[in-house]
Image (cartoon, rainbow, N blue to C red; front, side, top):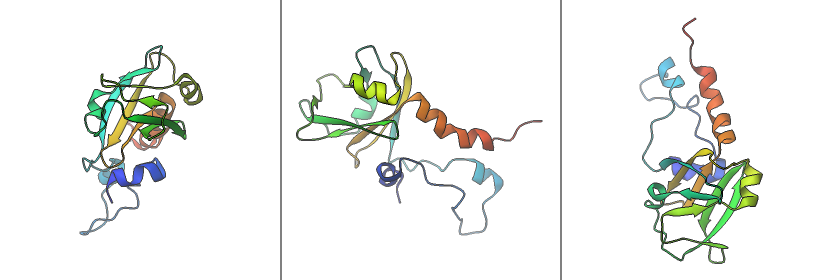
Length: 150
């Protein structure tokens, strides 16, 4: 199953610990490393300005959104999801940017100048914006698994 097929349903990467290789058990290094990308997702790091504007050209180039297409902004687990919707309140502008409404920024704890990760896949028709708190939460299992030199 492709990574992009799992994103909206779970909003979490597949567990590497449950994976099995055909030629035997996983090595410790394979367990500690995240799965390799299958290329179905495109990522970018961006910042939000005081108006909620996000430069998103890199991820928007992956989608077939056209200027004037209507967009809806929703949230799940403090991740901002922007997707095409016929009666959406926002539109795709000529410039390759997105706008996160003030109420959504407050809900997800996004502040002016915050850096966050954008992710998209053409088959999802959705841009996912992962604010700092979500990135911190996502990185915690990996940080705890990194062996120390002590």
